[in-house]
Amino acid sequence: REPAAPAEASAAPAASAAPAARVDPCETPPAEVAAYLEQEPGWSIVRVQDLIPDDQTLWTQYHPDACPGFTAADLTGARAPSYALALRKPTATGAQEKLVVLRRDGERLIAQTLSSPVPEGFLQVVWRTPPGEVSAWDDTERARLAHDGVVYERLEASAVVFYWDGGGFRSILSSD
Image (tube, rainbow, N blue to C red):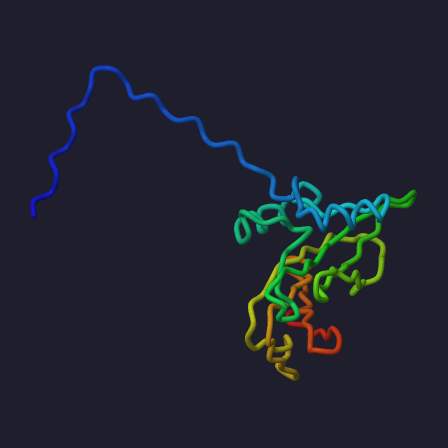
Protein backbone atom coordinates (compact mmCIF):
# COMPACT_ATOMS: atom_id res chain seq x y z
CA ARG A 1 0.00 0.00 0.00
CA GLU A 2 1.39 3.38 -0.96
CA PRO A 3 1.54 6.33 1.46
CA ALA A 4 -1.06 9.02 0.93
CA ALA A 5 -0.01 12.00 -1.11
CA PRO A 6 0.61 15.16 0.90
CA ALA A 7 -2.24 17.64 0.96
CA GLU A 8 -1.78 20.73 -1.14
CA ALA A 9 -0.78 23.83 0.75
CA SER A 10 -3.37 26.57 0.66
CA ALA A 11 -2.57 30.21 0.22
CA ALA A 12 -4.30 31.12 3.48
CA PRO A 13 -2.62 30.14 6.77
CA ALA A 14 -4.45 27.47 8.72
CA ALA A 15 -6.29 28.66 11.78
CA SER A 16 -4.61 27.36 14.89
CA ALA A 17 -6.78 25.83 17.54
CA ALA A 18 -6.64 27.59 20.86
CA PRO A 19 -5.30 25.33 23.61
CA ALA A 20 -8.05 23.76 25.67
CA ALA A 21 -8.55 25.38 29.03
CA ARG A 22 -7.07 23.17 31.73
CA VAL A 23 -9.73 21.94 34.11
CA ASP A 24 -8.70 22.00 37.76
CA PRO A 25 -9.32 18.43 39.01
CA CYS A 26 -9.67 19.82 42.56
CA GLU A 27 -12.50 22.15 41.56
CA THR A 28 -15.32 19.61 41.65
CA PRO A 29 -14.67 16.79 44.09
CA PRO A 30 -17.15 13.91 44.23
CA ALA A 31 -20.40 14.79 46.04
CA GLU A 32 -19.47 12.59 49.01
CA VAL A 33 -16.17 14.44 49.45
CA ALA A 34 -17.90 17.83 49.17
CA ALA A 35 -20.47 16.74 51.79
CA TYR A 36 -17.68 15.72 54.19
CA LEU A 37 -15.85 19.04 53.68
CA GLU A 38 -19.02 20.94 54.60
CA GLN A 39 -18.82 19.24 58.02
CA GLU A 40 -15.18 20.33 58.47
CA PRO A 41 -15.22 24.16 58.62
CA GLY A 42 -11.96 25.78 57.56
CA TRP A 43 -10.47 22.59 56.08
CA SER A 44 -9.93 22.37 52.32
CA ILE A 45 -8.31 19.90 49.99
CA VAL A 46 -4.71 20.55 48.99
CA ARG A 47 -4.59 22.05 45.50
CA VAL A 48 -1.72 22.29 43.05
CA GLN A 49 -1.34 26.03 43.67
CA ASP A 50 -0.91 25.34 47.43
CA LEU A 51 2.32 23.41 46.74
CA ILE A 52 5.74 25.04 46.49
CA PRO A 53 6.82 25.66 42.85
CA ASP A 54 9.12 22.61 42.63
CA ASP A 55 6.35 20.36 43.97
CA GLN A 56 3.84 21.89 41.54
CA THR A 57 6.13 20.91 38.68
CA LEU A 58 6.63 17.37 39.98
CA TRP A 59 2.94 16.84 40.68
CA THR A 60 1.79 18.02 37.26
CA GLN A 61 4.54 15.97 35.58
CA TYR A 62 3.62 12.68 37.29
CA HIS A 63 -0.10 13.21 38.02
CA PRO A 64 -1.26 15.72 35.36
CA ASP A 65 -4.98 15.01 35.64
CA ALA A 66 -5.19 14.41 39.39
CA CYS A 67 -5.82 16.57 42.42
CA PRO A 68 -3.09 16.39 45.08
CA GLY A 69 -5.77 16.71 47.77
CA PHE A 70 -7.97 13.71 47.07
CA THR A 71 -8.01 10.37 45.36
CA ALA A 72 -10.60 7.67 44.89
CA ALA A 73 -9.56 4.10 45.63
CA ASP A 74 -11.12 0.71 46.30
CA LEU A 75 -9.50 0.35 49.71
CA THR A 76 -11.67 -2.44 51.10
CA GLY A 77 -12.60 -4.55 48.09
CA ALA A 78 -16.13 -3.11 48.05
CA ARG A 79 -15.80 -2.33 44.33
CA ALA A 80 -17.05 1.14 45.18
CA PRO A 81 -14.84 4.15 45.85
CA SER A 82 -13.46 5.20 49.17
CA TYR A 83 -11.59 8.52 49.27
CA ALA A 84 -8.34 9.75 50.77
CA LEU A 85 -8.14 13.48 51.49
CA ALA A 86 -5.02 15.57 52.07
CA LEU A 87 -6.49 18.56 53.91
CA ARG A 88 -5.14 21.91 55.05
CA LYS A 89 -6.52 24.59 57.37
CA PRO A 90 -5.12 28.10 57.80
CA THR A 91 -4.51 29.10 61.44
CA ALA A 92 -3.34 32.26 63.19
CA THR A 93 0.23 30.89 63.25
CA GLY A 94 0.37 29.34 59.77
CA ALA A 95 -1.61 26.27 58.80
CA GLN A 96 -2.27 22.65 59.69
CA GLU A 97 -2.57 19.58 57.53
CA LYS A 98 -4.03 16.11 58.01
CA LEU A 99 -4.92 12.94 56.12
CA VAL A 100 -8.50 11.64 56.30
CA VAL A 101 -9.92 8.55 54.65
CA LEU A 102 -13.61 8.24 53.85
CA ARG A 103 -13.77 4.44 53.96
CA ARG A 104 -16.55 2.57 52.24
CA ASP A 105 -18.59 0.35 54.58
CA GLY A 106 -21.55 -0.98 52.62
CA GLU A 107 -23.50 2.01 51.32
CA ARG A 108 -21.99 4.53 53.75
CA LEU A 109 -18.62 6.21 54.18
CA ILE A 110 -16.85 6.30 57.53
CA ALA A 111 -14.41 9.15 58.12
CA GLN A 112 -11.13 8.14 59.74
CA THR A 113 -8.14 10.39 60.37
CA LEU A 114 -4.93 8.57 59.46
CA SER A 115 -2.56 11.47 60.09
CA SER A 116 -3.65 13.85 62.84
CA PRO A 117 -3.46 17.61 62.28
CA VAL A 118 0.12 18.84 62.39
CA PRO A 119 1.65 22.23 61.61
CA GLU A 120 2.03 22.60 57.89
CA GLY A 121 5.58 22.42 56.65
CA PHE A 122 5.84 21.40 53.04
CA LEU A 123 2.42 20.12 52.07
CA GLN A 124 1.91 16.44 51.45
CA VAL A 125 -0.10 15.01 48.57
CA VAL A 126 -2.22 11.87 48.27
CA TRP A 127 -2.58 9.39 45.42
CA ARG A 128 -3.82 5.85 44.78
CA THR A 129 -1.51 2.88 44.46
CA PRO A 130 -2.80 -0.38 42.98
CA PRO A 131 -2.88 -3.76 44.74
CA GLY A 132 0.46 -5.51 44.90
CA GLU A 133 3.57 -5.65 47.00
CA VAL A 134 5.10 -2.62 48.69
CA SER A 135 8.29 -2.56 50.66
CA ALA A 136 9.72 -0.24 53.26
CA TRP A 137 12.33 2.23 52.08
CA ASP A 138 15.06 0.18 53.79
CA ASP A 139 13.63 -3.24 52.74
CA THR A 140 13.08 -4.31 56.36
CA GLU A 141 9.33 -4.71 55.88
CA ARG A 142 7.02 -5.81 53.06
CA ALA A 143 3.27 -5.79 52.66
CA ARG A 144 0.98 -7.33 50.06
CA LEU A 145 -1.94 -5.02 49.30
CA ALA A 146 -5.07 -7.03 48.47
CA HIS A 147 -6.81 -3.83 47.36
CA ASP A 148 -5.78 -0.30 46.44
CA GLY A 149 -3.72 1.66 48.94
CA VAL A 150 -3.15 5.37 49.34
CA VAL A 151 0.20 7.11 49.36
CA TYR A 152 0.62 10.18 51.57
CA GLU A 153 3.74 11.79 50.20
CA ARG A 154 6.01 14.71 50.85
CA LEU A 155 7.37 14.99 47.32
CA GLU A 156 11.08 14.19 47.03
CA ALA A 157 11.25 13.40 50.75
CA SER A 158 9.07 10.63 52.19
CA ALA A 159 6.00 8.56 51.43
CA VAL A 160 3.76 6.43 53.62
CA VAL A 161 1.50 3.80 52.06
CA PHE A 162 -1.74 3.25 53.98
CA TYR A 163 -3.71 0.09 53.26
CA TRP A 164 -6.71 -1.79 54.67
CA ASP A 165 -5.92 -5.25 56.07
CA GLY A 166 -9.53 -6.28 56.65
CA GLY A 167 -9.71 -5.03 60.22
CA GLY A 168 -8.04 -1.65 60.13
CA PHE A 169 -5.53 0.53 58.35
CA ARG A 170 -1.87 -0.31 58.45
CA SER A 171 1.01 1.71 57.05
CA ILE A 172 4.48 1.25 55.72
CA LEU A 173 7.10 3.95 55.18
CA SER A 174 7.98 3.32 51.55
CA SER A 175 10.53 6.09 50.98
CA ASP A 176 12.64 8.28 53.20
